[in-house]
Structures are given as structure tokens and as C-alpha cells.
Image (cartoon, rainbow, N blue to C red):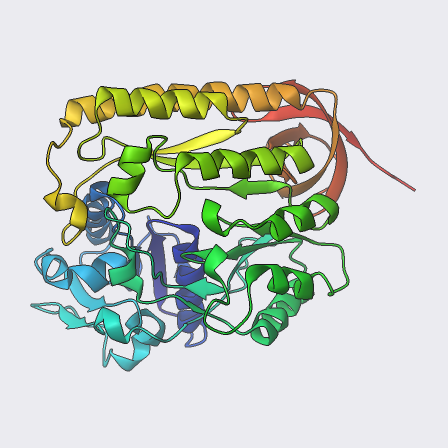
Length: 434
């Protein structure tokens, strides 16, 4: 039996699609192998959001070749879509597939023999209309599944290459999403994460919206919960917030990109909101859902960001009742409008500012976790570890670590939080043993 090893760089959407790629191999008799083990074929699904993702792709190719110098190397994903010629010059790569072609790998392969020069198959971004696989059932995860409901993006943020890599915004029909949702529940997944490039834009071109989709999904009976992945602040409607506040099966958790707390920088970024709207959305969420977990994306060192702009961002985030930050150091991306902006921030200063915001994130998370003490939440536990510990998440995205002799894997358990550490909380499981 031939073996295939898979590696994913980037966002949760990429993980969904890598899993689907793995399925296409297993249906043809391949065994999925660990990436650090010898395999006949290595598939690397790439990202291009940051410069590090590109560099990491090269490192992953070298790692694969160390495991098997004769392994057939396939590189696909956003980096492949945008800059296939660069990848073609990475020694050892045999096949380069764009964003659409990744779901049709076997249409481009006649044999898995090493090539002198990698073949390139990509569809121009303006013709990326297919949706591809929306989900995949993985034997490695029986707790949480990611369901792609939307792909592509019509926004024109000046720092971003994603619209060029994934094409225009498009959505699955509600009926298709409901069918796939039911299929995932039938495989005993307890948490379904709705994901996409711009999830809040769901339905904009098929005369529906995310709120309507959520209402339809909640008509499905069962013991499950739905988590919404990252959603733009201007697309987080009152209707969605109000629905989450009253529906137990919707996770009390939002991840809301900010990118900067300076209105001047937000305008340079060509974002579709200013800080006042962002603060108003956070206030609305916390008013209706006091225990809601809120994550924030922020970019540090954008061209023209002065020390005053950065301090404005730091102070703005400090004032918000948010739970954690994802801090990204700005990196120049080819073919973006931001490249033409004057006054780039020196890299050492970008890193200094990044570290400051990451310290702020640690304080925010610790404060949020401390706020949870002596409260009881429903936790979905995941996989048992060898030391009898098991991890899980509350509805508001607090990581819990618990030690028990009782099998609670893939089960909802009432849990009282007693202590908080840097990355997780501990406490007592309230088990009904009858």
C-alpha cells in the first residue's frame, strides 16, 4: 500500500481542504502517513498571508525529502496560486497546483515519478468559481469538524493577497450546508465550526445571509454546538449577536478582526469600518453575552504606522473587554497596494511592537480566565492523553485541562472552573454516573 503524507500551513480553511485532499488519496488505496515518516507522496497545502509562510514552505519541502529523497512532492494552496514560478525553483518539487486544482490532483498525475522540473497547473484568479470540498471526516478528530460555507473574498484590504489567491466571494446553498451538517452529526461530531475566507459575507450573492443559515441549522435536532469562525465587525449584525445570546447550541465566542485601533491606519488598510464601530460591536456583544469570549486579530508595523498610531492601538485594545489577541507582524506581500505606501516601519521596531501586544494578549487572557473562576460551564472534551489528562473547550473558548479515570472523550460535561493558568483552566467535572 502506498503512503501519502499531508502538511498544512495557514488557516483553518486550509485544514478543511487538506483533509479533503487526504480523502481523495485514501479512496484510491493510499494510507495516510505521518509527515515525519517515509512516504511515497508528500502534499503541502500552503498559505501566503505572511512572509514566514512562504519560507516555511521551503523548509517543509526539505523535511519531506530528508524522509524520502525519492518522494513525490506536491505543493498546492494560496502560495502555489499566486507565485507558482517561485515554487518551481524549489529543489525537489514535482507538481504545483493552484487553489482550484488542489481538489483534482489525480487529473494532473500520470505517475508518481520524480520530475526534473515541476509541472504547474493553476487557474487565473478571475476564473476561480468552483467551491471545492466543504468538509471531510477525519479519523484523527471525532470531536470538532470544520464546515466550509463560504470561500473567496470581495474586500480590497491593501495588505491582503487572499482575494487573488482564492477568487471572488461565493457561498454554498443553505440546503447543501444543512445536508453536510447532518452528515457530520451522523459521524458523531459534537462541534461544527462554520468557516470560510469571509464567513460574515455568506449568502450575499445567493439572496440569503449568515443569520438565515444559522436559523436553518438550529432546526436540526441533536446534542451539538455550532461555533462561528472569524467574522468581520461590519458583518457581525445585531441579529446574529442576539441569536447567539439566546441559543445554547451557538458558542458564546466571536473572533473579530480589528487590525488596528488607529482610524488613520484603518483607512490606509482600506478596512470597511473605523474604531468606533468596532467598539460598539464589542459593547453590544458584552451587554447581551457577558461571558462571551472575544478574540482579536491585529497587524503591527503597517507602513506609515507611527509610534502614536501604535500607542492608540494599544490603548484602544486595552480598553476593550476582549479575551485574547492574534498578533501579526506586518510583512510585505507582492502585488498589494500596501507595498506602494511610504514610511515603512523598520523590522526591529515591528518586532518590538509585536512583543508588546503579545504581552497585552497574555494579560487579557489571564484576566478572562480568572473571571471564569468558580463558574460552571459545559465543556466538550477531546482526546485522552497517556497521563490520563484530557483537554476540552468551554462554549466561550476557554481551554480546560482535566485528569480523570473516566472516559469523557467527545462528551459534553458540566465543569466548575477552580484555577487558571497561562494557557488553560482546571477544576471539577460534574459527572452524572447514573
